[in-house]
Image 1: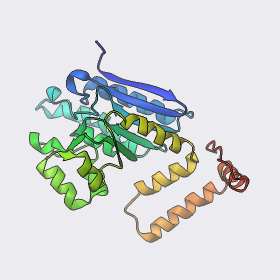
Image 2 (image 1 turned 90 degrees about the vertical axis):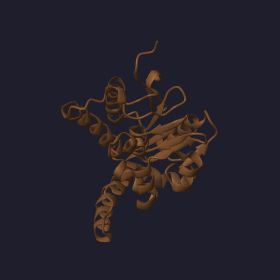
Image 3 (image 1 turned 120 degrees about the horizontal axis):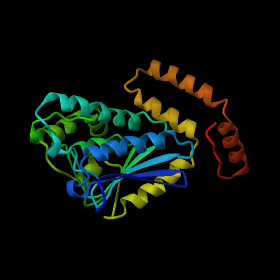
Length: 257
């Protein structure tokens, strides 16, 4: 029997991190979280990795928090949360594009984890649920910020405060996910998208993602930030390669410097 945890595959500049805890439907159990942090760290610091995919084994993304391990004592929670929040921060603030490939469903903390990604590809039979309220908890792992940013405050309140299932079709209409695929094809589509990201200029992607993460900003703040970023990017070899490729009518080969 496969032990709970995460595996990673790095192919053509794309790191695919797969959560696997079959008995608990890929819940964020201790082994899964420990491996997830390790592989996220590895992918984000590996210069050969240009994009990251998060997915789950066995036809489901993640069932969320490992309820069987919850303790009413506050201290275990205080020890658990910092690691989970470090993972959240590393995904959201990473310089590399992150794609969530969702089969089956993403529930509770699994939904929170998916919404930290830059793009979410979902099978058209998947379901989503912010199930925290059903067990007496507040949404965590950034969901109180990421969900309103995607679907608007009113719809986010409805999803979080009622804890009802959202179908893949509803999720697409709401903006909760970015694209639907037939069942079983979310990961292959995510890999194709990751290859598109991997072909882009890494520094330009990093600054674009960093700027969006600074929202909300005033126009003055945004203009000051973009001037700083653009000033740096104008000095890069990637810009020279991009200009050269443009005039030569070919695809650029960006290297990230």
